[in-house]
Length: 364
Ligand SMILES: NC(=O)c1ccc[n+]([C@@H]2O[C@H](COP(=O)([O-])OP(=O)(O)OC[C@H]3O[C@@H](n4cnc5c(N)ncnc54)[C@H](O)[C@@H]3O)[C@@H](O)[C@H]2O)c1
Ligand SMILES: [Zn+2]
Image 1 (cartoon, rainbow, N blue to C red):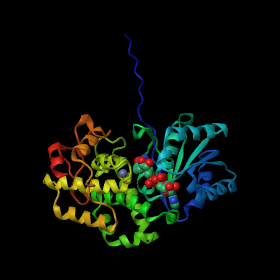
Image 2: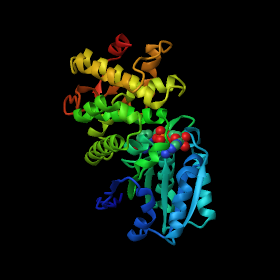
Image 3: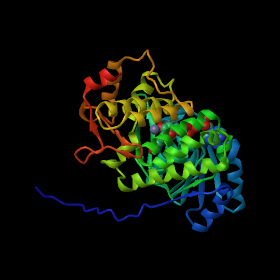
Image 4: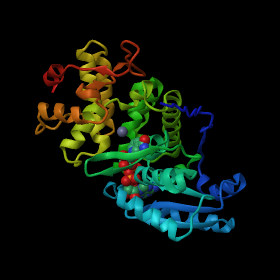
């Protein structure tokens, strides 16, 4: 037997900047020209965002003598699939996008995830730029390099890690969102407060009215903190071996609730329910205190996010669904639980805490 070793030491620097600046959307084409990132730009977006911001952005590229093409698909999670990905790739092939091309992901998390995955595989990898236009995309999906599409067997099952070249956030683009979309992003932002920043948590307690009046300063503040927290966590644990798990607070029970509702309950609402349920477990296990849990419930109420598992859901179904979740290892249910607002509990050097099924049953 012969053994040949292929040594691949990771030396590639995958660092990137997140630029948060009001009005930056107009400046992106000239910034990318200056950076000499590529010669041809595929602006991938959905039809809603195309008419709001895509056409202007494309004109900006053209004015800078940069060849570009908008490739847009109908909005919605149901289009985040392999068929849409293949269709986008065919559009790019027919329009002769080659290795000197750049993908621009303009839109919410659906666009970011699919465009990022196209960028990860087109000609074995193209640079891509994220321009998130929803609060979820700003504080969550545009950072961290996880790209994916959904399948009939589950969400986000086919994908790749591919870090963007840069992320540009223009708060002005958020002004066309509705309260429902703001709430989706707020659920993740509240999560950031619990897992890592008590000041952000207090800011949300005191300024919810400003966020729902689309106050740019308040929105910018929560985006900035959200990005910092996610970036910090991802930086320390890019491939989710331990610390990155804290981002899953509320998501173990949340995913099960989302799933059992057949996605009638939105992700933001489901993880709010999940955070409260997992918070109750943390209190029950003596890791967290009830006073802080009540503060969390109050904050969700202020944001009009739900906190109770719907009555029609059965504890055993929730447990079975959690066991099937790709995040649970070998059928054992694992969660991350708070120790105090701003810090997660660490047991035996691990943030992933194994939970007894009987305890969950009792709780639900
Ligand atoms: N990759 C990750 O790490 C990660 C993290 C969190 C979520 N996600 C993914 O993100 C997706 C959810 O993202 P989302 O909530 O942004 O959904 P989305 O992309 O579907 O956007 C929601 C809706 O808002 C519209 N829209 C987008 N920007 C707008 C704007 N500025 N004004 C008006 N309307 C606008 C869209 O057309 C869409 O109809 C899910 O597929 C989820 O799996 C990925
Ligand atoms: Zn989430």
